[in-house]
Image (tube, rainbow, N blue to C red):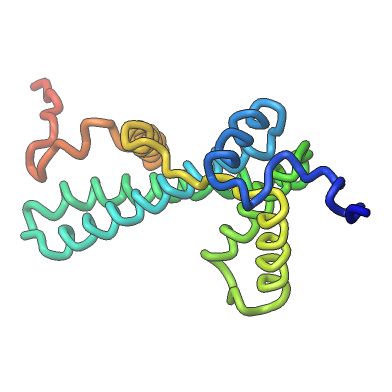
Length: 196
């Protein structure tokens, strides 16, 4: 007599079927599961934030190394980039805040929500403190059952466009004309003075 456990049907996506099956599952559930779209948006905002952070650090070094006449121009670019990084980080935080309001419609959707939660912790707190190892354990178990959501970086052109967008927002927020970073100290536009 055959073992009755062998007749049990498996979930449509299992860890043993490989990444190709998981990737197809993400394509299939992407429209149907808003949690997967939330993860994609969060990963994109996180990546852009990290790119802007690295740019800000390079610009900070240039400001510190710049001669006095050159420093003002570099400070403007640095200030814009700092604010752009804040804007990108804020976008990621807003997506994190949506987690409780987005209903996962699949096991991969639950994996996606837990990926955001576990991923957000990489930037805060000690990952060895409760409940983070426990959440990571649940996420690992769930991935064994449902498969993993591919965590791909967005294309370079998308990242560059997002960086430009956040830099434009930052420029507007800090009250600088978009051309301000191109002006050098002493090259400010001349204001007409009329003689009386």
